[in-house]
Amino acid sequence: MSTGQNNLQAIFATPFASIETGSDPAFNEALAGLCQSRCGPTQSAVGALHATSASDFLDAEEGPVSALRDLVVGHVTALAMGLNSSRAAELQRGMSQVRGWCSIVQPGGHVPTQNFPSASWLAVYCVQAGAPAEGYRQSGALRLLESRLATVYRDASTRDMDVPYRYGHYAW
Image (tube, rainbow, N blue to C red; front, side):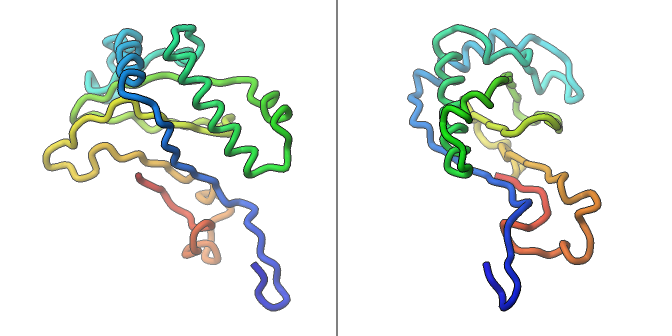
């Protein structure tokens, strides 16, 4: 964007994409069953309302898990290719580590806040959404908490910028 003598470039803009994968209900049902078997009755900060598997869930060779891994990596690679000047082979080499786990959230529960400081990309795949919790209008929301501009990059000049430069947390 050019404004008179100034040339504005988005150097800190954060890409976000929402993708319809076209996965069928039988695929999601199989994934839900595997997730159920992998999520032990662990107690977390939110008690029994949230259970999670180990972070090696996507390493499993069961058909649905392998297909999910390929699906997610394929979509992330396609998005990254659209935003980069790199070739597909270069990006595939860069995808050296893929970590993933599943979570089961009971009504009234939530996934605790998490931080992924070494991650280049983050993907969330909803296998099975529950019914909205009665009386809780934000039930089922996905919240992405912005931390980039909560540091020295945040001041009066960055307080009220327009999208895609806006500071703030996002909920879908």
